[in-house]
Length: 78
Image (cartoon, rainbow, N blue to C red; front, side):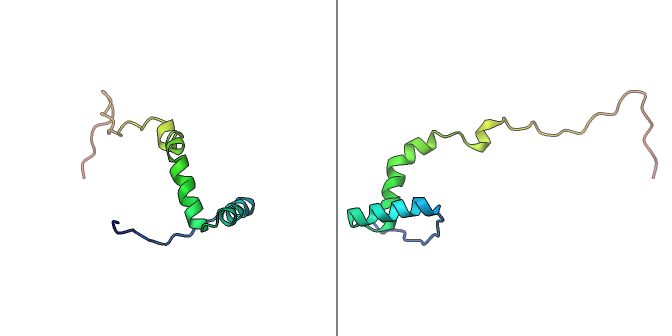
């Protein structure tokens, strides 16, 4: 088996959701971590279908300096 990256990360769930996860972990005699990993694997494809905040609005065009208007003020001398 390949090496596993076991980095720790704190996740915060609403109380009722955590209670459901804990109940399911107990029912399946599995760890909470295992339940969350399985849920991610099952839901990953659906989650990727959700529109990203970055996908909602098109990117803004780059800002270019405005050209001086004809007949405007002459450039100032230092």
